[in-house]
Amino acid sequence: MTANQKPSAVCLNYYLCGGVLSWHLSFSSISTVSCLDELHHDDNTRMAITMENTYQMGPYKRFSVAAVTDILEDVLTSYLQEERYEGEWSQKMTKTICEVIRARVKDLMIPRYKIIILVHIGQITGQSMQMDSRCLWDKSNDTTASYSFKNRSLFGVATVYAVYFE
Image (tube, rainbow, N blue to C red; front, side, top):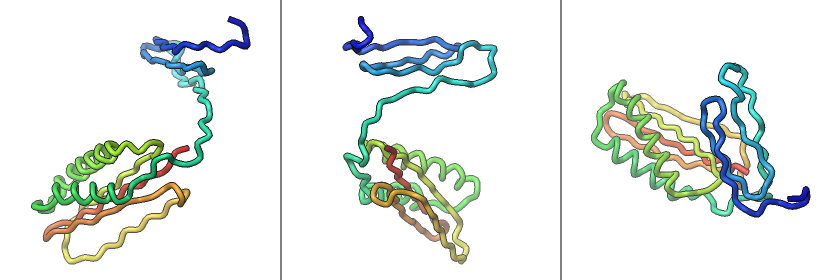
């Protein structure tokens, strides 16, 4: 093979580096694999992975705020409808609801969006509460969806931030 020729086959390579098995798939492109050279080295210097630019400046499929809001409403209502507030329970339930929302949003298969999910559960004791957030983002591609739930004992607020990743 000469210097100007590119490989036309798909290459799948396995590397055992530092006791870790990693795989590398290349499609006629120049790339490197990161791994530890030896086990006794404590420095975690890794080789950079070079990826070709896609030149895609915007999303092919937009993040559906309405679909995500429906997911938030369904999950919060189904998990909190008949519950009473308890401190330890709310910590566990917050994590559970967060994971359920994450799985359902990922099922929408919206590519190139980073998803951040915040879930708050609190006790209703006659207080008032205001929640705000500020984000530095691209208003044409990045977005958010939120839903609030309340029963006699507790409130729940779920927010999903979708940030487009170029």
